[in-house]
Length: 315
Image (cartoon, rainbow, N blue to C red; front, side):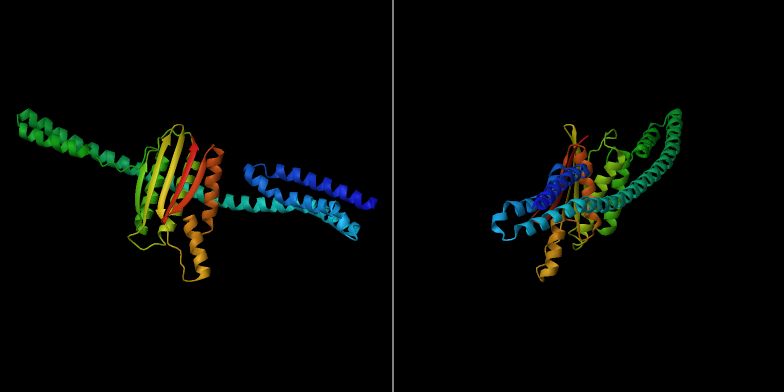
């Protein structure tokens, strides 16, 4: 019997040490998620304890308690390996998604550089035409031809009048939105963008790209499941009293009730608004990680066939 109690004490101590280690191992996770994960070692401790506390109800309780204590020691050894494997797998997936997001950022920056080169070329063209128009104005004034002078002045004003086709002041986000707008046009998705993104935001460019790119990617993929003419995305982004709000709305496909298996897949897609592509879950995980690190929150709702993603973080 002393051996049973000794092994029980060892099992309790091992599980307690394992629980403390798991709490430290999961330190990067949100508090609620850490607490949920620790339900597993807590249930193991309860299982071992029940084998000793309920000994009057077992005819051969020593054997039951010995088995439970031995299982507790084994679980205490395996728990850290199990959770470490889960964390490594999750981190590998997140790193792969980060690599994809960095590629998106590089593509956005290249697109921005291309726009800058085009803007410079356009500026050179405007300068040349403006000089020509002003020279004509000067010549007309020299000859006293007021009508010609006014005509050339109107021409000069027309030359310097350029369309305001920028999405926002932030150069990287502007380039990213331009690239996503081109993609939406290719997919037949109507993009309504109302973005007030100052160029001096404290949020790093890579995080802004991750948030905007994931939100829009998920929305576009959800829209492609709908027929042409019903594909649209509304994007709102603006500072809000020390915080920054990003909100994206898009329609989602209605659940397919023709078959149980298909209906389950469609319901899940509609609930998440991301289609059935697995990388979207990782994308939302990265968005949540960025937002929570900046004292914010991210919410996803789906009502009346409209999916809404809202991200609010401190800038």
